[in-house]
Length: 179
Image 1 (cartoon, rainbow, N blue to C red):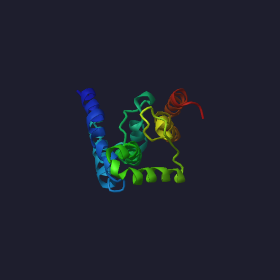
Image 2: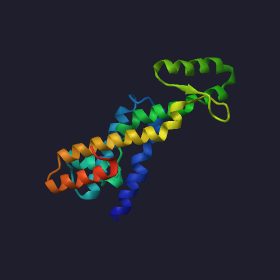
Image 3: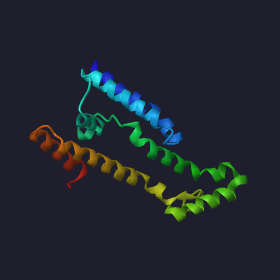
Image 4: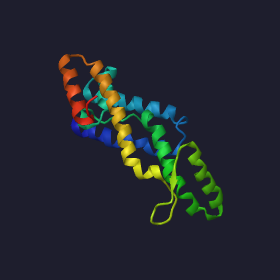
């Protein structure tokens, strides 16, 4: 059944290399990400009965379900944010894992403020946690919305019919806000 197969593709194959995106240097992951994304696209095409699909169709497939997509999120596009997010979540724990290295780690964490990462010691446990971690959901939502809006604008501009263009414009305005 195609619905079950598509669900397995979206829930099992698409995120199958996310752990690598969080732990391997993004530039080193480029070849694997490209292969993974190509296989995802090929499988998606085969499930729909096509040998190849147009780029705007694939862009729409990458959109979230709520915007009419299939949520086929390309590993290539999430490899850098995933790596940085993993690093940011880990760095604050290092002084507690390696007490002997705490002065060096604290010095490094404090030096992050020179590149615009503000730090605060506001956690109930007294741990040093970057302020931006408390805003992660908001930032991730904003980045996701910007990415989705960019994809939607590209789809609207390349829609094959006025009806498709209007439908996508309406969905975009409803889900992501006007403009």
